Each structure stands twice: as C-alpha cells, then as structure tokens.
Length: 199
Image 1 (tube, rainbow, N blue to C red):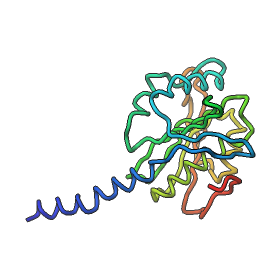
Image 2 (image 1 turned 90 degrees about the horizontal axis):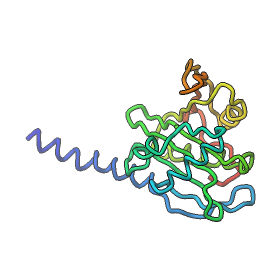
Image 3 (image 1 turned 45 degrees about the horizontal axis):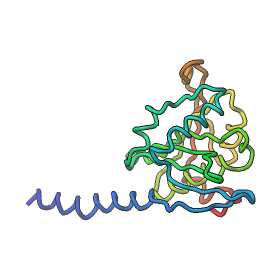
C-alpha cells in the first residue's frame, strides 16, 4: 500500500515538477533587440563550445579560464545547467552560463562573457536579466555569482541589477589566485528587475 502511495505521489508531483522545469528551460531561438541592434538569442549547444572558448580568450587576455573539456559536461542535456548565447550575423558575441540548485533554490551564474568590441552595449545586462527571469519562473529564492575583486565594472553592473556583496573568497581564481567577491540577488526583495529590454 505504501509503495502504491509513493508511486502515485512521484507520478503526480515529482514528474510534474520535472516537466515544469523542462518547460521553463526550453526556449525558442528568436531575434531580440538590444539598444536598437538585432541579435539572435539561443540556448547554447555543444557545437558552440569552440566559439565560447574563443570569446573567453578575447576577454581574458588570451587565457581562457574554461576549456573545451570544462564546457562539455555543462552543455550536455541536463536540467541543472542553463546556457544562453547571443549571435549577430552568425557570429557568437556573448554568452551566459548558470547552474540550477533546486534544493537551495539558487541559480548560480557561473560564466558571463561578451566579446570586447560588443561590451558596453547592454548584452551582459540583457543575458543576466534573462537568467534572473528564469530563476523567478522556477520559484528560486536567489541568484548568485562570483566576480573578480578587480572587475569593478562588472560589480557595478551586478549592483545595478540588485545584487549585494555577501563576502569575499580569498585566492578563488586559478592561475593568479585573485580574490572573488560573492554577490547574491535575493529574489524575494524585488518583484521585477529594472531593464530596458521588455524582459
């Protein structure tokens, strides 16, 4: 009797939650307008990895912090990862990656990169706002991230979106062992996020 009840519960509720999450993470590739420019928004796929690594090289002075091997498990079909990218005229110009923790109700932004020549045009802001929207749809409590202590420009962007500094991780980054600022957006404090993109 107890087994039947457990089976019924799992079919009724657990599978439903799984399907709802899958539906929330399923996006249709489409054209978006960001500050007057058109971009193609899509979910990242394994075939995008070489271009993603190249963007990281451009952003981080020739040294990509993430390798092809590091991205591969992130982009295989799974419900605890969510990556988006922007293309313009078939050129990958920006991407964002996140890990989803249902138990903690946290969406952790693991990676944001915008080609240098496309920076300061609202692409990073747009992608972060998209991730925040997905976290809301999943009824998560927080969106979190780490940012280099020297990257004041990114810290300002995150603050503009409502993120608060909650700590510092000493020697966090590989290679140079730079400290990371921990930042968290408490989704219960904000009904909506400020944006100019109709998100």
